[in-house]
Length: 159
Image 1 (cartoon, one colour):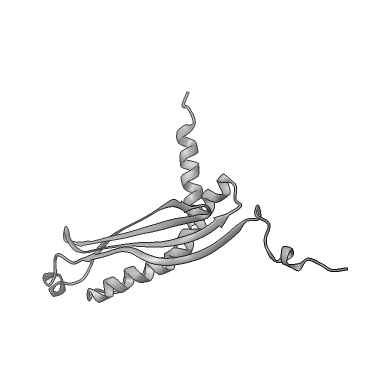
Image 2: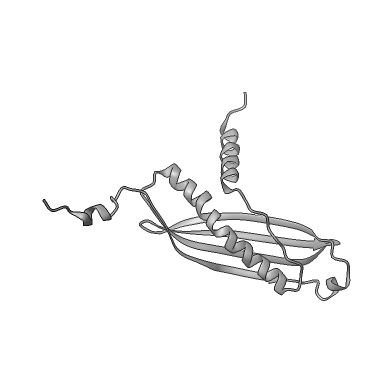
């Protein structure tokens, strides 16, 4: 009796699939408007860091996710430097329901992109002759759950 092994080797079309197609920098900028004067003072910065994500469908099963990371570093009310990196990736994602797809696009994909973006931010900052800006890891699942909880609370009518 002959077995059909090629059918077993290929996943069913409704089986979930996830793959990273490409990781790249979509945009990067670095500005240091207070140089060289800032190098002549003691370095005691105030750091404002923001991060957000966006995603869009490119084709059936292909999505672009962009992780935008911005650090605005000030000292004495002057901007010492401003760095922004848009770390992006193309992901193959199929066979997921709406809620699960949302979780993959807002938790899994940004989690994959973050180490690349963190390195890009740090590289730009050190090339600008500033001390390394080592960003702490981010728990994207906790951020997602908090955002969902806040959205649910805003929809509850107040009596």
